[in-house]
Image (cartoon, helix red, strand yellow):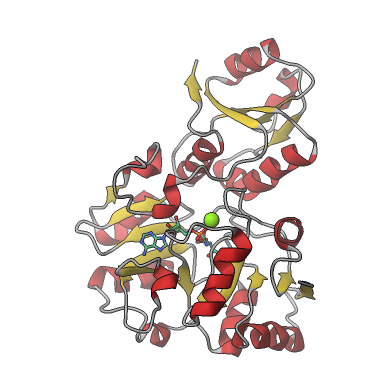
Length: 341
Ligand code: TXA
Ligand code: MG
């Protein structure tokens, strides 16, 4: 398949380019589009064949449900069964933005989209390009992250091209995603609401609005593959570069000593800015705080692959604020190989 590249500058949106992307989606095509979190691989959420093409392009297991993206509250009609008061309050505070709410599925959502679950994840993104495409097409868009299944998510158009060129109808080429990690996923079909995946909207912020929430065990540790997993996506090895990744919880000095003892040809490190001077191996930087770490995380993991690195030691960020999301993704990239010094 020849993949069309559609450049759209988010600061100066070309209506003709938006119409082109919207037309492909209305025709049942699959299009990678930027969001504020990561790039998404979008199709008409109501069109079963189109949604199947998303799964095929990504090699995504069919039991992993998709998030449906909307721009207006009225689009929820038929997508969800009822809207609890807590969802209204959360939407008021965090939509548009990086929060996905899992709600009771409405009759118009096909089973392929929700992977057969009685619930559906809904998000109202803030990125002007996906918003323009949703508005122009009039379609709710099912969109998982625009990476091949198991690979790090994509935060630039080039990442999408690397993973999906030749496998999808089009890639909308815009700039870097500002957040850099996928949305917070909160289930409101359980009582109390349950955090299934941490993201830029933190547990503390959610609690401020709706009081008590529960953390799914998959937020801080490995999901038990034998039990019924509440966010099916969290059970797979994920975000994995080709290199072996090990997460190291330690002071900067202890981390450097540990890495330097193991320094050889194929070894590299992922650490915070300023720490690279202590290291005898090449390093990618996580910036100087957790927001910067989220922003660069997936690009850094992909860069290790490009350089053919075999082992990556990661200086573990504090799992507080957005750092919890970074820690959660790194744990999966490391297949839960985490050590504490
Ligand atoms: O930021 C994001 O959420 C990005 C952008 C494109 O919006 N999308 C994204 O989609 O990360 P994906 O498919 O890579 O991750 C969706 C996660 C998966 O872990 C999935 O299992 C979970 O959300 N999920 C979706 N619908 C669900 C449902 N009905 N119940 C429980 N978990 C659900
Ligand atoms: Mg994903």
